[in-house]
Structures are given as structure tokens and as C-alpha cells.
Length: 540
Image 1 (cartoon, one colour):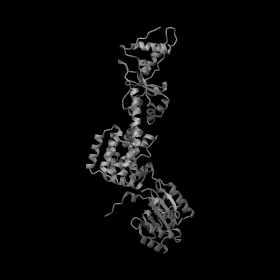
Image 2 (cartoon, one colour; image 1 turned 120 degrees about the vertical axis):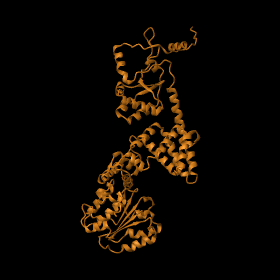
Image 3 (tube, helix red, strand yellow; image 1 turned 90 degrees about the vertical axis):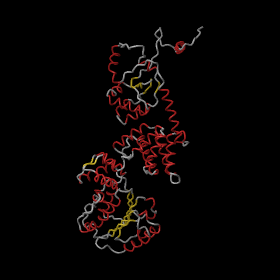
Image 4 (cartoon, helix red, strand yellow; image 1 turned 90 degrees about the horizontal axis):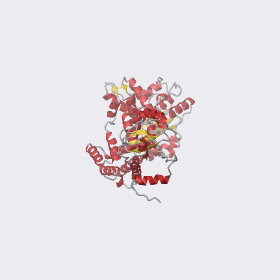
């Protein structure tokens, strides 16, 4: 019976060229090998699943290969085949997590004095080297500095900051980066092609985003998806397999914080607690979720740095644009602070207290909460001024789609009579109040169309009742003639104000000339307004 081989082992790169996303390492190693400049000690650092052990094995094979090909092992010589099948024991891989004592290192040092049996070099790959004890490090120092000529050490670690400076100074260091999602997705699609499995690009990108820069994690998730699929892997299957289908509670809690709904938020936490959800893990997930919201809110294109893709990213983007940055930062800071306090307090109680403070900023005295409350007051005051009620009988302002008939009337110099005594667009413009958040709407429109946003750059907007009157060049209104673009503009306005407005052009009020044909002076205008209001004014 054949034992199934996991994908990350089955498709482990055998050449430097096959290693994904680490050219700063592979190119340098190949050049050194071709030039014959082989170091006695290497240090590979980086996050998990980025290729440290893989490159260490390729390097160990390349230095011993009988017929190297441009720095890569040939893979067919007796030494390469022997290292692959385990018949040659001159390359030793040690897990420092389980062999971290000084006795293990002393045994290794004694063994290194013997010349290799079949290969050119005796290579020691010490994985997770930061787990070695201080005594083991001290025992290794002298040998690491001046090893026998036939010995090469390759140290690998995910936590380089834990290594002693004396170890770092004796090694040639290579830093492995997190692999870009696009590179991971491309590799996954190649593996699926070899495995005769279809995978959507969105599904591959979701796996890449979930793996967080690690190829091994990505291949492990793909392995699970293949096991659950019937030959086709789509976005929904990946979301369910990776546990993302159950992450909707993060968005629900974020919306509760946005809307101040404490009751519903506490009900969600109670349901998660009864479902055995760890409150510390929930707090960590919420901190990561609000970090994503912060990046989306502040960056022009955050897809490369946000741990989400497809539909989840779209929902997250819509939520981030509808929230104030101060509220997002307040949430991120609160969850990180709660996470540190959970080590000494009841996790559920701390989680509930944090949620209540976020839903009710007036209960929180932190600087972040105060800033959030100040911004809310300023925005609320601006909206109250902007949405002052207009005179009864106001009629609809023509939208940009209705601009042509209006334009023809202006060209002919004729006015189309309106029914009743409802005020015209000029009256609505006179009663309109400036809308101070208009630049924020233009910023949101940049994510949809740069041309539309550029056309409205420097424009202004006014609110008159249920209408948003826009003061902009004619070219801007020409762009809004398309229904899809008008809908996007209304959606942007709704995200900022929480209301749906009708769109229309703004016409600045002009001073009415007096009987002599000259503009009426300010005093005369004041007297007329006072009399219209029923105030008696005595003239002398």
C-alpha cells in the first residue's frame, strides 16, 4: 500500500530556480557556488513556510554534486540520488527544538571531525536553531567559527532576534521574505494543473491570502481542498475549508461597533462563547480585522497587504469606507490592549467590557475614544447645518441625466413654467448649506473611477433638504450622465452621510437689481428682509 505524500513534500523544489519568491537568496547562492566561494556557515532567517529548509537541502546537495549545473545540483549523479533516497548520510538534519541540550551539540562536534564517507562535505542543517540552550550555543561557538574544512553548517530560524551576537557574526546571513500572494497563487495553479484539478483564480488568491506569505501553509490548505472537492476548487470551497465561512461574526461585531448596538454585540459574543470560541482568539481576530480596515481606509490599494480576497475583501472595503478612521483606530487599540490584559483577567468579561466601550465611546476615557467623539460631534454639527429644512413645496432638482432639456431651455432663453407655487432650483440653491464632507466623497470615488474623481476635483456641494446640489464644471456632469456612475456617486454619499440624496446642479444666487438697474445695497436688502419677516421699521 502506497503512503500518500503531502503536496508540500511532493512538490518541494529541487533547484534554486524552482524556489518561489526568494530571488535575493537563490541568485546569490547560485553565484557563490559557480564562483567556488563556499562559506563554512550559513544562517537562513524568515517566517515559516518561506523556503529556508528547502534552500538548505538544495545547497547541501549542490556543494556535493559531482556535476553541478550553473550552481544547481544535477539530480542524476550518484551523490544527488543518494541524498534523495537517504542512502548517503553525510548530510544531517537536526531539529534543535528536540535536540537543544549541550550533550547533543557535543556529539555533533565529535562526529564532525570525521571525514565524509561518500560526499565532498559533511553538511549539518540545524532547524529552529534559536531553541538551543545557552550551554549548547557556547559549545557550538568554537566549531562554528573554525570548523573542519569538510564541514558546512546551515542554521535556520524563524526568530533570529533570539540568537547570540557571537553566532550571528560567524554566519553568512540570508533573509527570506514573505511570498507575495500573486506568486503563491501562480504556484498553486501550477500544482493543480499537475494534479488534474481545476481551481478558480479567486480561490487561489484566497488560499494565498490565508497562508499569509507561507508556501507550505498554502499547499497544506490546497491539499485539504482537493480532498473535499470533486475535481473543481472554487472560492466557496476554500472559504469553508480554511474556516473563513465562519468569520462573518467579525464583520457583524464591527458593524455593531459602528452603529453603537451593544445588545446585539453582546448576543454575538455569548453565542460564540457557548460554541466554545476562545475569547483570546476572538480578540486577536478582531484586532487583525480592524488592522485590515485601517489599511483599506488609508491606502489607495491595500489588496497586497490585506489578509482577505474576493467577496470578503469587497465587504471589508465597503465597511471600511463607511467608518471613520478614528473609530477604526479606536477599535484596533482597544482590542490590542484587551489582548494584553486577558493574561491576568477573565477573558470573556474583558471581551464584553471592550465591546461595550467601543459601542459607547462616551464610557471610554482613552484619547482614541475622545478623538472619536469629537469627530462625531463635528460631523453631526456639519450635517445638521447642511440638512436644514427648506420651504414647503420644494420640487425635484433636475439630475445630470436631465441636463439636456434644461440646457436647451437656457439656449432659447425661455423658461418652462412649473406647476403650483413651488420654488425653483434657484430657491433651493438659496436655501442650501455647504456640505463640508464633499472631499471625502471625492476620495471614495477615486476607488471607482479616477476620471470622475478628477473631473470633480475642486468642486463643492450643498445640501438642501433631500437634495445634494453640486457646483462643478459641465464636463463633470457629462461624466455623470451614465446611470452606473450616478449610482456610484450616490453610494459614496450614502457611505459618508448615511442618507440617500437626490443629485442636482447648484446655481449660485445672484443679487437682484433695483429699479435703477443697479445691485441692491446691503442696507436695503436687510430692511426688506426684516419687513418680510413682519418686523416694523420706522423710517425717518
